[in-house]
Amino acid sequence: MAFIPRQEPFTCENCGYAVEPLKRGSCRSHCSKCLYSKHVDNDPGDRLSDCHGLMRPEGIDQDGKKGFVIIHKCEKCGVSKRNKAAPDDELHGFSN
Image (tube, rainbow, N blue to C red; front, side, top):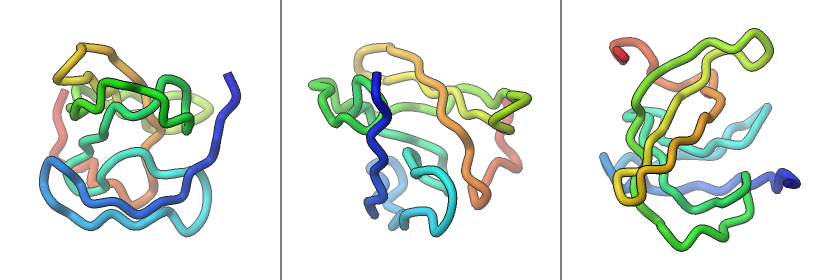
């Protein structure tokens, strides 16, 4: 599994927020306002998923190396994925 970096702006399909790419660091894979993502990848950045369901944020975990990690679950197919939180993500008020 090779990571394919993607720095693309997008409009969140859950809340409509215009999400901009990160200026520094990793690639953004979710909305910084509502934390929803979209199931577009099988492997990070490949855009090969046929599902395209919305990925609901189900929890926040803390990883010793990555910092905060958002746990997403696809509302369409049920797959769960972990995504590193970005510095500007609105994590406050999110409860597991």
